[in-house]
Length: 242
Image 1 (cartoon, rainbow, N blue to C red):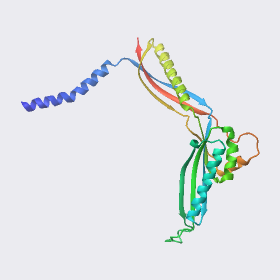
Image 2 (spheres, rainbow, N blue to C red; image 1 turned 180 degrees about the vertical axis):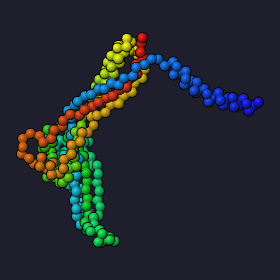
Image 3 (cartoon, rainbow, N blue to C red; image 1 turned 135 degrees about the vertical axis):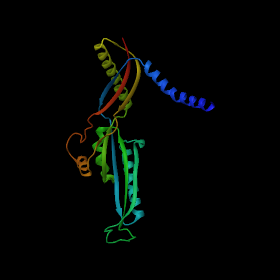
Image 4 (tube, helix red, strand yellow; image 1 turned 90 degrees about the vertical axis):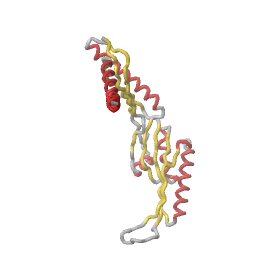
C-alpha cells in the first residue's frame, strides 16, 4: 500500500508541469508579432591603420634592436603628427631564425639570418590628414602596411537612433495589420532586439598601392570613407484588442 502511494506521488509530480504548461497556453491573450527594421547611414570619422616593420639581420640582437629602434621612431612620429598615445598600440611582435634550403640542409642548427617584425595599429581622427601622415611613415621605417579600416566614434548614438526607427516600424506594421482585421493594437507583450553596424569597414591596399598613393602629387585625398550602415532589428508581440 505504501509503495502504491509513492508511485502515485511520483506520477502526480511528473504530470504537474504538463498541467501548468497547458493552463498557461490556454490563458495566453490573442497577439500579433511583427518585425521592425531601422537603418541609419553615417559617414565615418575615424580611420584605423595597421602597419609594420620587418627586418632581417645575421645577428639576433642586432635585428631586434633595429626593429625596436624603428618602432620607437614610428611612435614618436605619430605623436608629433597629433595622434594621441592612447590611439597607438603594438598589436604583434616576433623574432625568429630563418633557414634557406631546409630540405638540403636537414639538421642545420645555425640559421642563415634572423627576421624580426613588429605590427602597430593607430587611430587617425582627422581623415583629411591621412595622406600627410602616411607619406611620412615610410620615411621613419615603415615597410609594410597591412590595411586600413573606417569606423564611427560615437556609434552608440546612431545605434539608439536605429533602434527607435525599428520600434516605430514595428508599431506601424502592427497597426496596419490589425486595422485590416478590424482590431486594435494593445500593450506590448514581448520584445527582442538586435542592433549591429558602425564597426570597422575594411579597405585593404597592398604596400605598393599605399606607397604610390602617399607619394602621389595628385590633388585631393587618396581615400574615401563612404558610409557606415547601422541597423536595428526588433521583434515585437502586441496584444490584440477587439
